[in-house]
Image 1 (cartoon, rainbow, N blue to C red):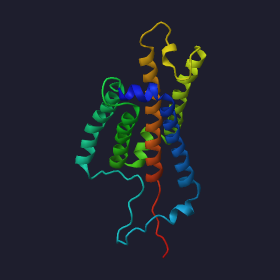
Image 2: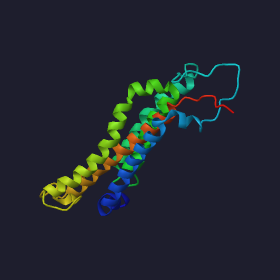
Image 3: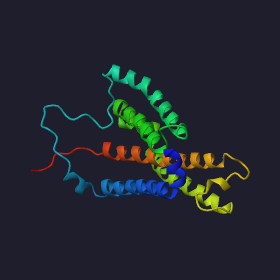
Image 4: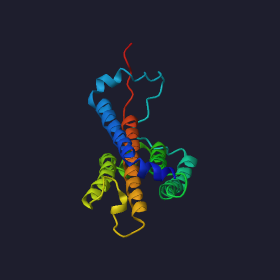
Length: 202
């Protein structure tokens, strides 16, 4: 019921929410990658210790339990994200929830195996394209309905003569939500995790 309301009766509103999330990513990228000097003023100093800070993207080679546990958990996290996505028509779930769950799998991978290793598995360029692609998928469903002679986001006209047109339309827009929210979550994590801490002058 909730997914049907969000994707169908409130389709315009949900498209707006997805666009706002993508716009938030653009704003975060402009703020965090535009002027490194401005960011340094907000970075707290690293505590003075005798040892040098670990290099960026260092792997937890000495944390065997964490590495093995992460390898066992990540596939099940992704599987649960798919369940939440496709079960959204029949129970709690949908694109927003599934995207956050899927993003946590990659964030966990980055925390355990290092940021550099995570970027090899899921390059930042792919993440940025993914964040924009979801909004385009959502909007394209609405445009397709217009081309079929219906109203914007009127899913019933997508598959003429099929009673499953409404369900197909909802699944497509939920896919768009999943893709955008997943890309935004991972992209923001990449930006924050990639910032290096420096000693701030008193």
